Length: 250
Ligand SMILES: [Zn+2]
Image (cartoon, rainbow, N blue to C red; front, side):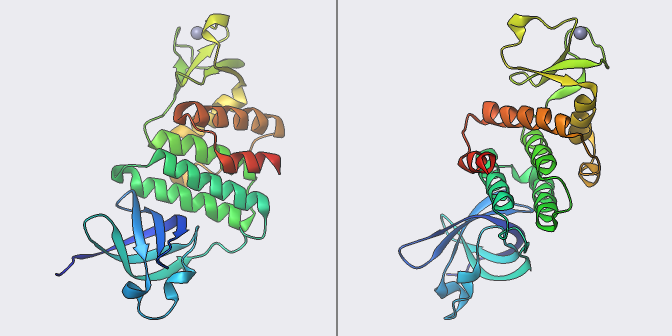
C-alpha cells in the first residue's frame, strides 16, 4: 500500500510515551490546525532519533497518514527554544499555552496565524526580553480572538461612546460598557478597566500579529489585564488550567 507524504511545520504541544515504545504527539501545525501524529522506530529507522521529540520543539515534519493518525516519516528540528526549561515560571506559562491551544483547537483556516502567535510568544519567553505577564495576556486574548471569541472593544455597547476614563469589560459578552450605562445587574462578570487598559486591549485585538508585542504597561495595568484575560479564557473555555494554577503559585 502506498501512502501520500506531506510536509508541515509545527510545534509539539503534547508528547505521550505509549506502551508500544512509540510516542504520540499533538502538533500545532502551519496548515492543518492541531494534528495527532505517531513517531516510532519503524518510521524513523532503527535509531532512537524519534526519542528526542519533546514538547515545545519546533520541527519540519514529513508525514504520511493511515486511517486514524498521521505518522512521522522524518523530521528536522527548526527551533528548540533553549532557555525555557531553565526557568520554572517560563516552563509553566508555556505549558499553559499548550493547554490553551489544545482546548481551543484552532481551525486550519487560522492555523498559520495561531502558530505564528505561539512561536512569537515562546520566542520572547525563551529570550527573557519581555514581561512574562504581558506575553501571557497577549497570548490569551489573541488566541481566543483567533478561535471565535473576539471581544467587541470599539465602543460602549449601550450608548456608542468610544472613550472614557474608565469603562467596564463584560467577561461573558466580550463587550465594553461605559460607567454611565453600567448597572450592577449587568455586572455579574464585569471587570472595571482604565483608559490605558482599554487601549492596550484594543491594541492586542486589532493590531496585526507583527505589532502586538510592541507596547508596555504599568504594573497596575498588567495586574488588571492579567486578571481580565484569565477570567475571559476560563469563562469561555469552561476549564481550570492546571499549568496556570502552577504558574500563579510560583
Ligand atoms: Zn455608554
